Image (tube, rainbow, N blue to C red):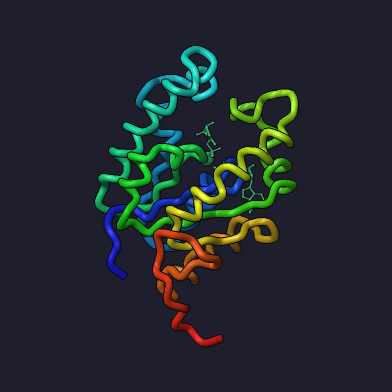
Length: 190
Ligand SMILES: Nc1ncnc2c1ncn2[C@@H]1O[C@H](COP(=O)(O)OP(=O)(O)O)[C@@H](O)[C@H]1O
Ligand SMILES: O=C(O)C1=C[C@@H](OP(=O)(O)O)[C@@H](O)[C@H](O)C1
Ligand SMILES: [Mg+2]
């Protein structure tokens, strides 16, 4: 399969990008990078602090720069923050990459993110409603950039990573109708 740069992992908060990313990298023998971790390392600040002090717009501008650098690498597995694909410039930069969309349903996504205060967007009074709105708004965006979509609801992180590897071996054919993808059917007979 000809694709450029790192394999990119996208999806909503709690879909498991930062958990599955390293497992996937390990299976593929590639280095792993996480955009949120790099953003915190390069700014010396926590994401929650940037949101609280400077607001989302400033965070998104920093994120766009960090992600542009990360995407320019030659290789690796690169997990983005859940909202990085909201940037049109970032979406354009994703063209030509293998982009893995880890999907998660609302109930499981809320459950996985509910224990953490590290995600300022979900810190409001009704995280369930916020998460639902976020999923509805972003699902089409994740699908538009993805070349592979994998459901994570009923899979452990290891099972998700295995499934991604299998799908990549099949040729990156999506589970369901995304935009930036190969549209022919899987060559693997089942
Ligand atoms: N497939 C999974 N099954 C169960 N729990 C998961 C799964 N993937 C991730 N988690 C858990 O959900 C939480 C959020 O995972 P994380 O990798 O930080 O998601 P993301 O980076 O997409 O926001 C973590 O506590 C993680 O252990
Ligand atoms: O969905 C989002 O807008 C965000 C997701 C977070 O990353 P994860 O998706 O890894 O939780 C982090 O980048 C920031 O809190 C904003
Ligand atoms: Mg993450």
